[in-house]
Image 1 (cartoon, rainbow, N blue to C red):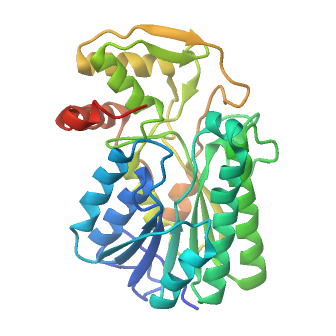
Image 2: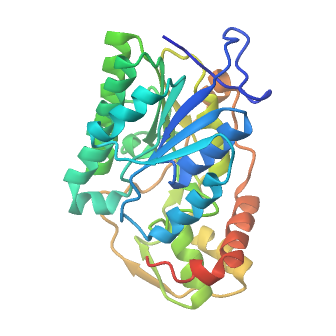
Length: 344
């Protein structure tokens, strides 16, 4: 059974206590916002990547195609159209390859839509995770990295620490992620699979999901469409740049036993109205705001305690919000011909 880790010191390299190089990794949701960046980083480190994605219609497919096309031209990358919900889609892939690590980034995301269709969230986020854990056990893959969410910290004191109780999820999305975390612990306990659970905080950056606020706000401000703000706009978020998230995710392949780790900005959370003003400045255009009531499924504020990430992964975010927004707006303007037509 392989137990693998990667650090930032060179191609496929590992911490000194685990000198075996990672050769092949599985990335699920590889055409997704975070998954595609994780795949690129692994390839940069000299790791062969098998990516799977079901390319569903959760949002405009042009965004996923843009990300996918950037990966398929790279040496060492193999892509399969497969669904983590379907064990029969996955089994042939596991028979063909021997994986040193599984990065499970496939998920249905989004708090509000999970209330409308909770079943798809449980199938993708919980059943999909179970399928991958079963295959990891059957095929002796000893390392499992699971993407989770800061949404689990609802009602807890900030900044959120990993040892806080997370037993009161406010949405089916958060509940489905909690289910995946708990199942991963069970497989660690029963079968010795080494599990890193990563709780992400408000990820943004180029080629982001069009159902998330950063993409929407940039598009709406640029074209002069009124922005819908849920709540009064004073809520805060701990924004984290996507490449920082990808770097931390790759680092999490090191042996940790079973460990939950926050990946977040770790500084002063940003007020939503201030975030909008920062986009206005970069586009040199004024936003028209339309306020609507906040859903009971939404958290008012988030803030990450990232001390543990520094201790166990030697990770901290490197891209501040000013620079990250510069890159995100620049990407949108560079891809304006098709990005402006993306349906939200």
